[in-house]
Length: 350
Picture 1 (spheres, rainbow, N blue to C red):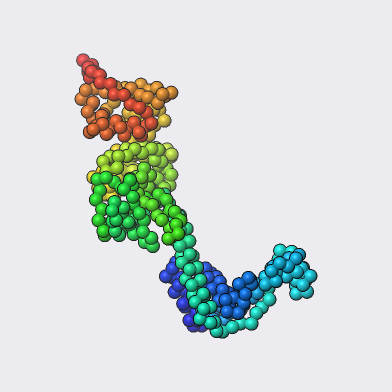
Picture 2 (cartoon, rainbow, N blue to C red):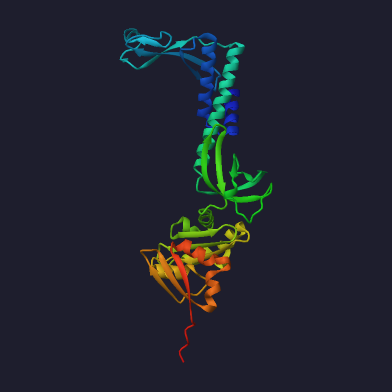
């Protein structure tokens, strides 16, 4: 059976706007009801339309709210009169009567129907997009840089553009139109102009989300990212742990021949990543966090969240790192204030 022109047009609107057939039909019926009320009814009347997309036929109904005392005869009916029309009605119910169908609408009524149809479809499209992208919050999406306005970068994410504000950009990166990037969806806000998608490449959760895409063990929850510390554009420290015996969490994140970490690094350009083993013992965790430096001893004050780190002179610069970066990131990763103490190199047993 061939599809009707009405249904074909509705299906086209559904495809173009990403809406369901039910949403489009409901919008058409609201617009038809408004046009009928404008042309043949009264502004206070309750008018409902039912449209058959297969035949193009419509039915019009007028509703009355059942009340004890009529205040507005255009939309209200007394309980006594309502019982004559329908059995079992009660106060607060709405009863309907079928009105004669009209094939023609006047110019003003047709314009009203058109305006309502456009407005309702636009609102439905905005709501559909809002729900779709709301579900993508805390995820990494791939987009293309659409334009740059001032210091704001607009990235095409498919059906919407996301905005990356200056504080969410990596200071060492330069962006240009046509550039493909992965971004972290921080928040999707509803605005009068439609959904506003706030995205970032500097957000603390961007790195864990990137690894989750590359490391199946993370999505399977056999490897857990316990903490991250990052100076965007320069260096990252990430602590991982296994939730299942026999799983190597660090090795899982690095991948065979470094393929998994290489995929993440390719997205981060010149940024460096240290993946360390998390440990519930703060002394061991601090030692791991300061890698690649070798630490001789750690003394922890759990109450004050402070620790003294003892290293030999040849490990001092490595422990501190360039411009203090290594110790700064290790401190942030572990949650401990770290005090580096230089000690003499232990003599080898003769």
